Amino acid sequence: MQADNPALTMLPKTLAVVEDDPDFSEFLAQYLQGRGIQVRAFSDSSDLLVDAGAFEFDFYVLDLTLPGIDGVDMIKLLRRRTQAGILVVSGRVAPDVFSQVITAGADMLLAKPVQFEQVALAIEAVQRRVASASPGVAPWKLDRRARQLVAPDGVHVDLSEGDMAVVECFVNAGGDAVTREALCQRLGLPPDGDNLNATIYRLRRRIERATPAVVPLQSKSRVGYVFRAPLLAV
Image 1 (cartoon, rainbow, N blue to C red):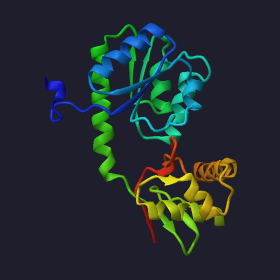
Image 2: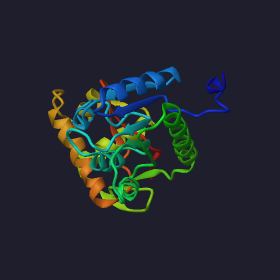
Image 3: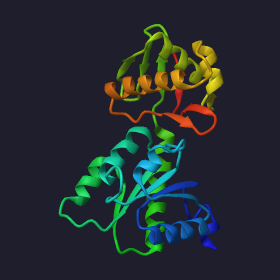
Image 4: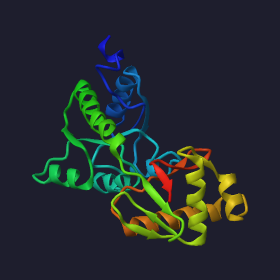
């Protein structure tokens, strides 16, 4: 009964399991679903990356030895897009495994074999860290006069005219998702989506090249895009 008390437990709402052992993945998913978490399982890291909601999960549990992109590289990719908790559960044995996964951006490492209860406790511990860190996050700022996006670490990112239009949409949305239709209309683009995807990709890359801060610009499955961080206009 304690697991149902929000004062005694803190678990993410949604979680992705990226694991190529079908039995381990299936039974872990069932166990976590029994704890009230919405779980999706991916047997290949590439399957996660091509999913429309790849960066929208509240938490990720990863193996390291995966088909497609290796687990360490997968952690690096996730950390560029999200501040969600990342737990590695792996049987990979090497002296530098711990330093590799932590340096890549994971929050914790558990070595197989492992009990599902241990996984749940580790998820809860990491989730507490994520939740406690969120309220103090410095906002991003749109400097309209300088035509720049200012990251929380103080880095100024120069914006093109199209970038400015996109960021203005997110400012006006106040944290809500902006539909693809609304973005295309603001940019004067056809509604087919390809040109919009390219515009968003270029904006992301522009930010990534300027600052190591996590880029909060993410896709919202079947809706459009959302800026998952405080964003102010000055």
